[in-house]
Each structure stands twice: as structure tokens, then as C-alpha cells.
View 1: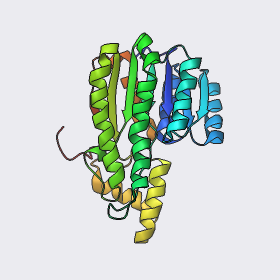
View 2: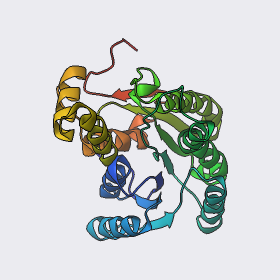
View 3: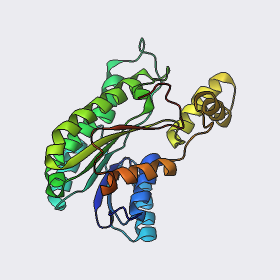
View 4: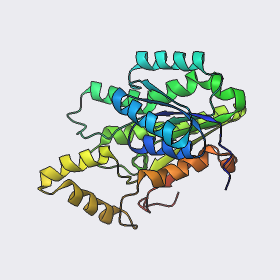
Length: 263
């Protein structure tokens, strides 16, 4: 299938590792030029070079912590000044949390609110002039935890739920500009963040990270395993394409059957 993406330009936050990197590679394979941002500059530059060489596309990279408003505003200014248009925005940057509500201080809540919600708000608002030129796509990477929370990460659950609602509101507003907004709610996707979480939680039970992950997948998913970032990235690419032109304001669960209700 020709996804009609060749020559388009996509901006991906958290684009140097995990899901963001897999989405970047999958889009590049379709001929999409990339703008990637992340906090770790050396890793970002290395991965950007690999993608550009392998897929023969343009890859520009910027060191940005999207949880920091001043850095994000400076980044948005750079993008709007240096690019004539933008076709795809993928708000992907994020990470899991591990806390109890009774002991988590305000600054922890504010940090993840900025990372998971306000980064998407600020980028969607700030890059609207570029996205309006040709019409475009915004995908917000939320989580199954937005509706089916895990007990050890109340802040993650709450901020991802807010991101999903923001996506719906944004979709209704931005479709008048020809911009399609959708939300992806992954389930168990194996990423460095999940491995770190499994190591921390597994140690408390006296088991290895791999044992923890294997048990989790078998307990929660009918498919019995974690998904790969590459499997998830294929779905992102389809939603970015004109093949998904009637998809507006929807939320898609890519979870191996984990969701326990009909939605």
C-alpha cells in the first residue's frame, strides 16, 4: 500500500529512544523527513545520523526538555522561523512514575503535568501556523493507563487521562483547519522505561526484571507478551497517512487485548 507520505515532514518529541525512535524509523522508511527532539543530545545525534543514512531522508535534531516551558518556547520559535510548513506532530515524550499519593509532593505532580500534558498543549498551539498550511496530523501518545490505571503510578495515570481528554478537545477544534488529531493508547510495549520499572519493582519481590515483565504480560494480556516499539510504530504511520483520512478524535488501544472493557 502506498501511504502517500513521501516528502512530508514530521516532528517527534522523545525521538531518540523507545517508541519515539521506532516511529521515527518507520516514518523515515516511508520517505518522511524528520525533526527529532530529546534531552540526551549525544544519543539523539547518533540516532539521527543512522536514520538519515539508512533511509536517505532529512533528519534535524534539537536538544529540548519539553517539560521545561522556556526550552519548549525557544524550540517552537526555532521551528516556526526555520521551516515553512509541518505535516505531522507526534507528542510522544513521557515516562512512567512510581509513587504514593499520600507522599508525592506537588513539584512531582507539576513536573509530569508539564511533561505529559502541557508539552502537547504548547506544541500543538505553537506549531498550528505551520500545520495549517497543508493540513496535517497530530498524534498524542497516551496510555491504556488513562482508563485502566496501574496502582503504583497515580501521577502517570492522571496525566495520561488528561492528555487523552485534551486530544479529544483538540481534535474537535483543529479539524476546521484540516488537521486530524487522534490518540494512541499503548498497553505493554517493551521500552527502556519499562525495563527500569521492572528492575525497581522486581527487586522488591526478589525477582529479575525479565521475570517481572514475563509475569506481567502473562497476567494482563491475552496475547501473553509485551509488544515491540516497531509493532506500535506501524500503527502510528498508518494514522499519519491519508489512508486514515476519516479518523478524527479517536483513541486507539494497541494493547494485546489487555483492556478489560468494550470501548
